[in-house]
Image 1 (cartoon, one colour):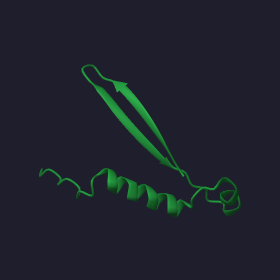
Image 2 (cartoon, rainbow, N blue to C red; image 1 turned 120 degrees about the vertical axis):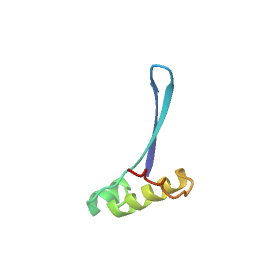
Image 3 (cartoon, rainbow, N blue to C red; image 1 turned 90 degrees about the vertical axis):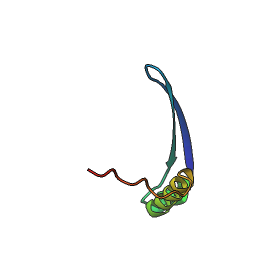
Image 4 (cartoon, rainbow, N blue to C red; image 1 turned 135 degrees about the horizontal axis):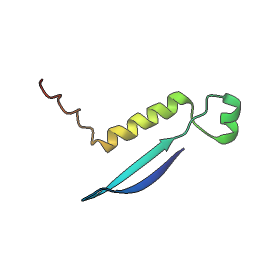
Length: 66
């Protein structure tokens, strides 16, 4: 189960669109059966998979040399 929140943030000379997606979990098996949420491990895996898709499955940018 996930929920998406979209915010528009005004800056001095621009607008930022920030999209947040939440993956809900519950660590209690009894409550999880009632509220239909994922385990913490399932929620983390779903969040990682979603992030991978959002990044376009690109490798991370190289760190600048310093």
